[in-house]
Length: 176
Image (cartoon, rainbow, N blue to C red; front, side, top):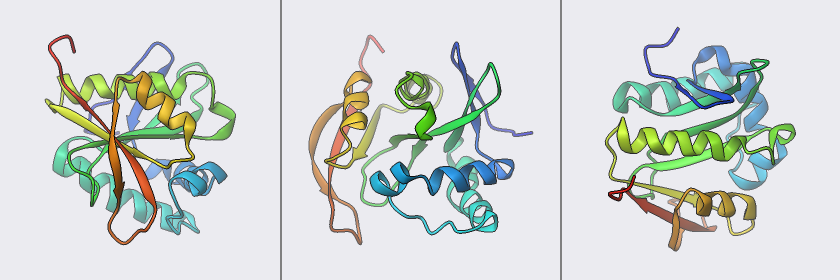
């Protein structure tokens, strides 16, 4: 289906998000935790979700070779969340991000997918560092970023926003 590379772990597939994922993206971007921790993207229909996928994900895949991946459980093909490598206004470098539907949280899926994508970032996309941002209240994301080896560096504010966010960074080292 897609010309961009998928990635696997023992339990998961990370498949480049495409227009067939519109229903899932609609559900994820309107989930309570997404709205609280990431923000409202004004996705109020499947058409909005398709447009978002085209503008935010497919253009980035075409430009960089990476973007957002839909995380699928191998055993039952359930679409559980997303994990991706992003370029964001106001964030230096490439940002790693993740979000899962509530019923798939606290089962190690976010770490498993983000860790696999971290390895791809360094060894397949030849990035030298990754960054990440999270809200002050999102303790689970902060914990996961630490588990990935990322270190808090500073507080930042994104353009056209007033909320102060935590900025993390991880640089490629010899043992990676």
